[in-house]
Amino acid sequence: MAEGENIEVETEAESETSSSWNLGKHTQIIELSEKLLYGNLSAKIEAAREIRKMVRKSSSSSKIRAKLASAGVIEPLVLMLSSSNIDARQSSLLALLNLAVRNERNKVKIVTDGAMPPLVELLKMKNSGIRELATAAVLTLSAAASNKPIIAASGAAPFLVQILKSGSVQGKVDAVTALHNLSTSNENSIELLDPSAVFPLINLLKECKKYSKFAEKATALLEILSNSEEGRTAISIADGGILTLVETVEDGSLVSTEHAVGALLSLCRSCRDKYRELILKEGAIPGLLRLTVEGTAEAQDRARVLLDLLRDSPPEKRLTSSVLEKIVYDIAERVDGADKAAETAKRLLQDMVQRSVEHSMKCIQHRAASCTPSIPST
Figure 1: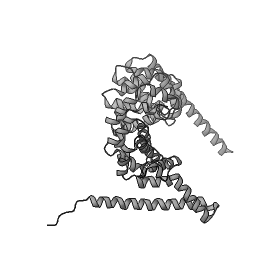
Figure 2: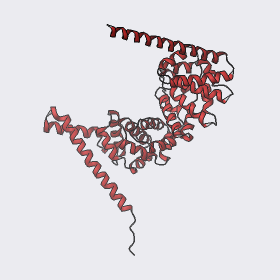
Figure 3: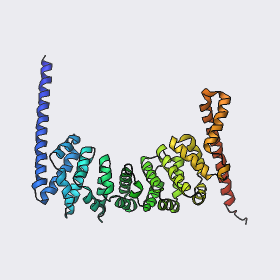
Figure 4: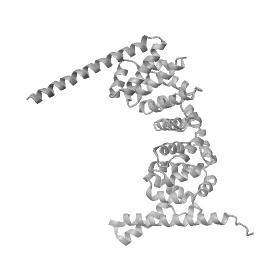
C-alpha cells in the first residue's frame, strides 16, 4: 500500500512539472508573438531567432510548432521576408523553415500568407547563403500538395534551375528535389523546366549512384525535358548525355531505369534517323534487353518499343518484341503445358537475353580491338 502511495505522489509531481513547463512555454510563445507583431526591428529579429532556437532545441518540437502557429507568428515572419534589412530576412527565413518542417498545416499557412513573392526575390539575390536558404524553403514548402500549383505559378522554377547550375552541392540537391516536387502536380511540367537544366542534371546524374533516390528525381526531370525538341537536342549534345542515360538503364533502380529508358525512347521516337546511331554507339542494347525482363511493366514496354526502333531491319520485316514473346510462350506451352508455360517462357526469354547480351559484348569488344591501332615493332 505504501508503495502504491509513492507512485501516486511521483505521478502528481510529474504532472505539476509538466504543467509548469507548459505554462512557461505558453508565456514565452505569447511574448515572442507580441514582439513580432508590435516590437521594433531589433525585437522582431531577436524573436525570430528565439523561435528557431525554441523549435530546434525542444524535445516536443511538433507541439511547439503547432502552438507557435496558433499564436500567430507566421504572418509577421512572412512580412519580415520583404524587409530591407538582411538580418531580418535571414532570421525570419530560418524561423519559417523550422516551423514548416514536418508540419503540413504550417507549410500551407506560410504559402497562403504570401511567402512566395519574397522567396522568389531571395532566390535572385547575389548572397549565395540566402539564395540557398530560400531554395531549401521552396523545397520544404513544395512538399505540401496544395502549395505546388502556387509555387509553380510564382516564377521560382527558373531560379531553381540557376541554383542547379551554380549552387553548392546541397543547393543543387535541394533544387532538383524542389523541381521534382513541382513537376509531379503540374500538367504542363515541361513549361517549368528550361532546356538548359539538362546540362547540370546530366552532370549530377553522372556523379551520383544510379539507383539512388536522387537519381530517380534527376532522371524524372530529364524524361520531362526529353519531351521538347530543345530538351532532346540538349541531351544529345551534353557531354556524356546519352551515355549517362544508358548507364542508368543498366545500373539504376526500378524507378530511374523507367525514366531513363523513357528519355531515350522519346529521343528515338522523335527522329529515329537522328538518334538511333547515337544510342547504339553507347552500347544500349544489353541494358535494354535486360530491362525487358527485369524492369517495371512500363519500363519493359518502353524497352521493347525502343529495341524495335533500334533494329536495323525495315519496319515491315521487323519481328516485334511482343510477337517474339508470343512465339516463346507457345513453345513453352507445348513443352511444359499451360500450367507451367509462363514460368518456362520467362526462363527461356531470360536465357535469350543473356545470350544476346554476351553476343553484344563480344561484338563491342571485337569492334574496340579492330579500332585500336597496332604498335609498330622496332
